[in-house]
Image (cartoon, rainbow, N blue to C red; front, top):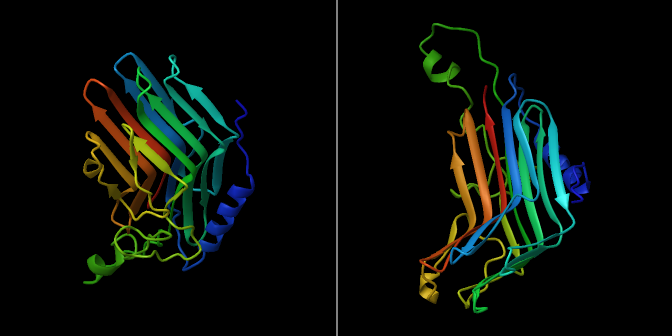
Length: 281
């Protein structure tokens, strides 16, 4: 299937950006880094008589890392279909990447990219259920931070307020907008977010107007107003957890489409997923 796992030029560029972010004040313990990325997750069922399931043709993963590490996987193209040839998928290059660089400020990033996507689903009468095309659809997320050296035990009044509170306030951050109006504190990191280039979408034969190139976090497109019932579409669908001091996790789906038309079709389509986390041990 011509799967490639290598430190290609895209991964080298990602590593350089992370290395640029790994400078700052001295630290002791290294944060535990986790990252994942995958290109596609597609589940479509038509009338209960045919279905199509394709999850993570390429993926990258970093698990509980405390040393610099990278992972990447790519395919030159994907061509697939359901048994009845009612649901078809084709792409150009798809790539999933993850990188962790340890330093005085450790940094972690993940990115998923799908080129030249064409996803089509037809009903038994050749009715158009779903048509999704895109030149480039990608998401990437990044974080950086450090675990300070715990100070010597003290019996001072300031102990509880200063010395044993874990991370410094605001120690963890990422590139780009964090969904709360903050731009991130580490300028060397790649921006967190999604990019949709030349994306066209039609659901139940109804065209969805032009989608934004760089959608804000959790941009929900109102499909009901277009007459598309039983469907939701979220762009740059972001999740965040952690306190930003001892732990922080962020994830992004460039596109997430769900469809449930009773008795006709159910679908859940995610394009370009990336997620990272840092935790103080």
